[in-house]
Figure 1: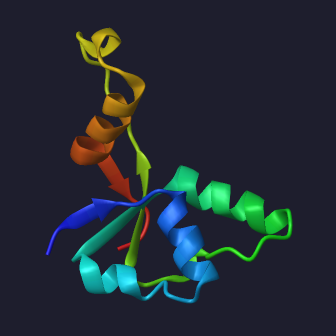
Figure 2: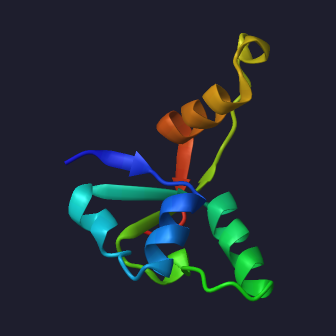
Length: 94
C-alpha cells in the first residue's frame, strides 16, 4: 500500500461524515504536516467539529525541515514543501 501526505480536507470531511477510518484502510502510512494539525485546531477553536490528528495512532505527525539548496529559488512553493516532506521530514510521533 502507498504512503501519503495528507492535507486538511480528507481529515476534515471524512471526520464530519464519520468515515475517518477509511484512510488507514487505503494506505500504509499517513503523514500529516504539523501545519495541518494547527489548521484543524484553529477550526476546533472556532467551534467546528474537526478531527484531532494527534489523537490518532495511524497518523504520523511531522514537521518539515528546510535545507538550503542552491537551486531553491527556482522551485515553486508547493514543490519545495513536497520535497521537504519527502526528504527531510522530522517524526513528531511514530
